[in-house]
Length: 332
Image (cartoon, rainbow, N blue to C red; front, side):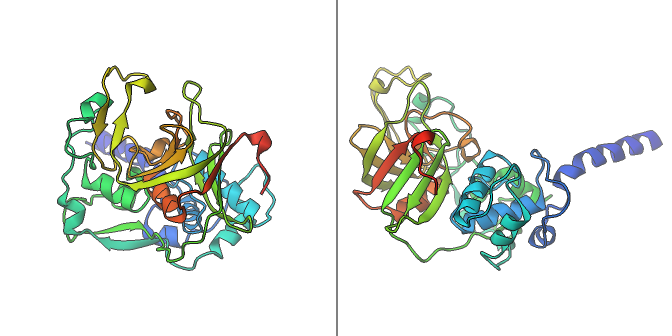
């Protein structure tokens, strides 16, 4: 019995550090101290930084509490916007101070799960093949946990770490979530730049000011994105996805066109920003926010669903979208 208890204690020690201090008080009071956080561990200071970046319109993509490539991209863009030096360490004391100054509100807050949150309908399983999606009535979430995580721009792992032992399918249950700021202003966007090398999207105002920044998945070697300047041709929330056999996507064997109904797990997520000229090109959401910037797309520009929704609200038909290579990118 003693040996079993000791073994259990050692296991607990091995597991606990990944989520040490991952609770509302620790995150809200987090400061930048000591050595840089490990890249594979959820860290209170990184959660705080990611939330503040999201509020400041410098999206880190999915808020997961880890110093990944998308968080680093957002930090570098934020630092550049504040004329702060960019070094090897992206989260410097100067950048941290500038982030803290952007918003005084708590980073993690309580949220009471509603009937709507658990109503569904939810998919039992998301098909892996596009052809198997065409007969589904809707491409909804697979669980209340997935729905809640996306509602608050979080990874499911962070949501679970913040709420140990909590169930996410019970209305009235109080859980800890990221405090996403509600934006009332809608500044005019004059131009969007898609950096094909850096895998980012930037929205600029009439005076050339940076209004919003997003990490993105931009095309692939097999299906590259276009070059030059296109324009926004359409903006459609909750779009149907229409597959044309002429696209010849890898893994899709259908010889006839088919349509997939709307939903957050639709291949283009909850938003489609169509571009012209060029049939089939657009900026859109994704059913897998954790893979933004980390996988390839079929020639389009892929953002998290919430980032695609945010960008769509800033655009209008006719807005220029420039596709640029890193060498041609202007330093902002």
